Length: 236
Length: 236
DNA sequence: TAAGCAAACTTACAGTGTAAGCATAAAATG
DNA sequence: CATTTTATGCTTACACTGTAAGTTTGCTTA
Image (cartoon, rainbow over all chains, first blue to last red; front, side, top):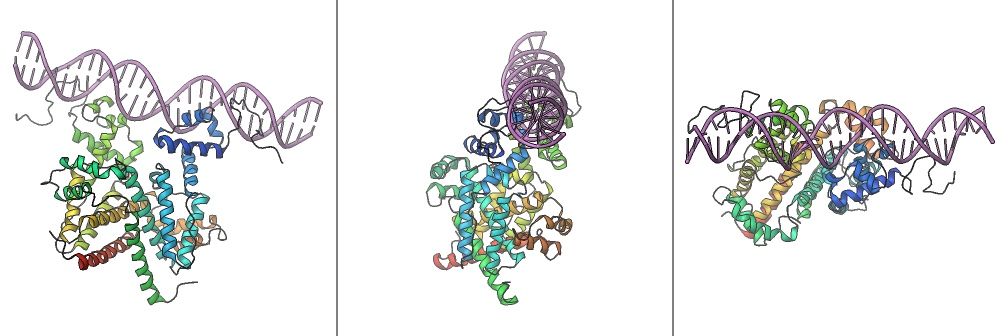
């Protein structure tokens, strides 16, 4: 039972010293994606980074889809799991900010999260805790579904805007000035006005994650209050 | 000058009767993507559908990226362009519903929209009109940015949830019942409860696009009212 | 009539995910 | 201890991808 780790349990024609494992593969894949972007991550390059042949990966993963699912699980596991401690709004606020930060750290992840249904244990744990937090605060389940949807759409949507922005946020004003002449004021007066404002530094265009978040949280608070008045306390 | 259309202006070694054109390529690509999904759309298959060789496409498009940008422009051009007629909320509501419906009609488009910055004329026109609508209603530009962001995140996020759902909305209750036993009630009590509710048909889990939308619109209305009281009428 | 050029074509290349099958050595079984 | 099984690596091969490079054709213009 107690065999020293890093020793293979079965035979192989190994080139490299360390044995392969699902965890080691996912870890390396995550690092490569962080460094070079997901579109540069191929099975062959991943194998190379692990000092192994491409097909060896398939002993631990059934296909690339599974690799990506595993990588996303790793990302989700970095999300802070919310806990209700009397203030659901601050719990949800922390939840959103944490997820946002993690998704910025792994810029390839947000888009992939939106393209599949994740049922890994990290995701299930996170979702369950999120639901529970709102449930404890008096939300009923349909409202919880709506609330989480609204918040998550904001998290992913806003994060993607930052990721897709052609320039980093601190050069936004400069870039707006550069592109402004390309926006005909007669055809697109409002876009032109917006760009002008950004150029003047009076509006960042990004970094207002929390404004939209509060819009949603305040809205939910009002819906919760209204529901509470009609149907009494929904706390089980 | 006036040469009858469908006749080539220059020589070629053409196989097919009709001449190629950017519009014809984009049109066919859009149809193929609608029918088979974007991941099945390759330059070769697109060329085949046009009765042409793959490389011929590159006389009209510089690369696949440009093809996809063009396809997305086609999708955006189907969005209803909002107009302010005294009621910004109903204008924004129509805007959101229209975009949502179009994105459902072209299920491959939403994810791609989130992965790039679109600066085509259809997108610019749509964005400018959207900004203008809110501007006419008294929003200042920073608030407009936040408002459009919040609404668009909802549009794309919600649409993607529907698109990614493993079953269509009318079989949701059945599917929930099928998967329910796979969700351990002790580990994930709240997810289990949610699935139970869906199975009982008391909550759809989807098709509540407008709930989240109203959450945002009502929130914006309050912010607008508050801003109006402080800074007076911001209408130019 | 000749030159220029746009739009089609052919060929080729470097890459992709992965199916099929082989080789090895540790573990399980007799 | 001898044998079989099995897990894990490797090699080869295939169908498919986007697209660079170069060629052919015939309309348009000088």
